Image (cartoon, rainbow, N blue to C red; front, side, top):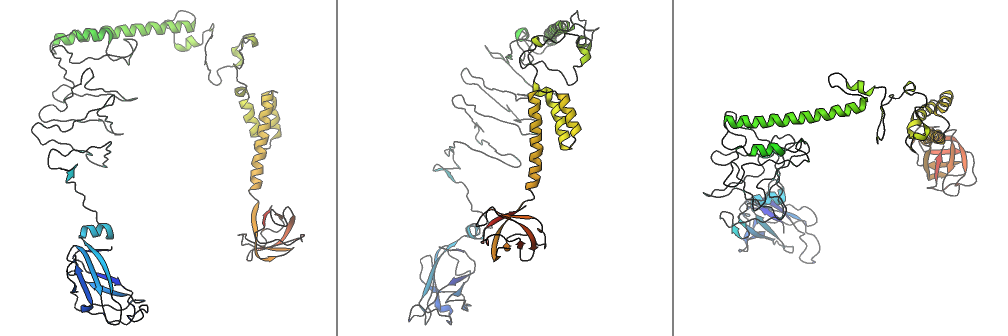
Length: 493
């Protein structure tokens, strides 16, 4: 049922009006007056249109325009329009009169339907019983706040989130350029209050691959970044590392340090601060001593003699005359680091080199590159020099073969790119001429080239092209045994 906009004029197209005698001949000369156009509003009694002089000039095949005024469409619901006039069978149509917003949304496309939520699960959204249950809610906003939650009750909770099983209640991720994932402010009272359930933590925070799990800054003029106060039998804050050693930099504060700090009680007095600083100084000195001793031991092993950190440099260790490299799986040397002068006679023993310890591919790589360069420039002398420099291993011979094959393939691809494909077309088809579907518009463009048929009665036959007409797309060639047919395919090489 077509829609009409409420309180808006409209012109209806109605028909076909046919002769009332034979019931089929379209009537094109009818004079449709105001009294002939009857309207029923939403089931009411029929009454004539309010348009005193309707314009109803015949359109085509017995169809006529029937105008309606804004008065005719001033009632929502079903609108029935019938036209009865002398000499033709009656014609009627039914329409649905809808509000302007509905019409513009569904017909004109210039508005949207109002979808204000008034109930959830049968309960009014104005009350406290309306509950929305969803498996998942994805809210995205291009600018501003995506979700705003506020409780208007005296003791109401703005947001109550609970995980299930091993799931997390809330996961918050910062944007690509954001400085905080969560920003919480409170004019009075706690900005965030978190209480763990049972044996579980109230908050679990884990940093990303390179980011902080939590970053806390104190107030500019006053206020603690973190204020932790223990209760009767609980710690205000406990920091425990997970590394295997108390000196593991990823282990947090643990070991002796966490135990010692845990024994400090009372407020942030000067005495307590001095005690904590003393603990930190002791731990840091221990770490520095351990690292320094271990590093000196390693450098002594490399140098072969005693290493003195303020006397010997790392290059001095690496250029020592008696260096032994053994059991070094994955040991690698930079390009150019081994030169002939480095090795004494008998320094490399063939029997001492394990199978596959030296990769043949790595040895022949430079030789292959030189061979390929010589082939690409057709420089036979360069190819000969590269082969002699690379040795006579089977791997090198294969590399030469591969290089030759690659060069040949490149030239073959260039040749194939010049081959023209086409097919015979309706027109002149004889033993010496053939109309084609070629696109070339220049006369004599293919003269002197070879024509080879790839299908039809002339398949595998070849002839030389003696003339080409760019206007008619006709090829002339040395006589062949039979005339080709339309759609027979060919190539020109």
